Amino acid sequence: MVRFEDLEKGQDIGSRTVELSRASLVRYAGASGDFNPIHWNERFAQSVGLSGVIAHGMLTMGTAVQLVSDWVGDPGAIVDYQTRFTKPVPVADAPGGENPDTPTNALTISGKVGALNEEERTARIDLTVTARDEEGKEQKVLMKSQAVVRLSA
Image (cartoon, rainbow, N blue to C red; front, side, top):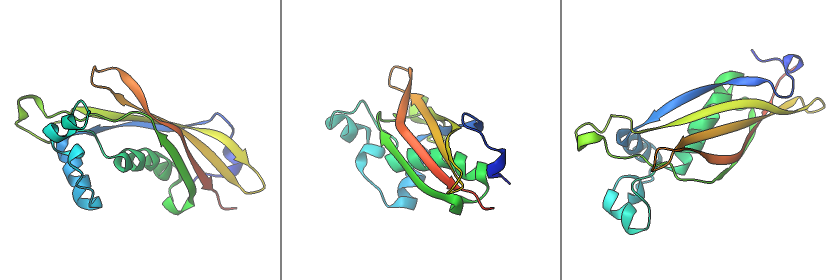
């Protein structure tokens, strides 16, 4: 259990890497109802100017905030969550196209306590979220990704 009194600004809350595959995108599309072809159809994604299929923004955002939810131990403690999408997360077809479960990109997520509000008993958690671009270079894919957590007495 996270206690407000034990927190300090700059404190690391952890990190994780979450692999993404084409199958991840299909599962998310089914769960969310977002069947936009830029998330599954290579030809269509390229026809609208993308290098290929990209992950859903909400999948990226939700995957990132899961770090905070797991850290605090209660998803209901998150009272605000905001971010800016800065770069798409390309999810290429598996080599040879044989196994859609083969990960072809990953989100790397880390979090730190960015601010504490003693009166409200809240902590702002600042997330850093990166993934590889089309050339394989690690890029920030979310900016100003911040979750506010209210901690009980």
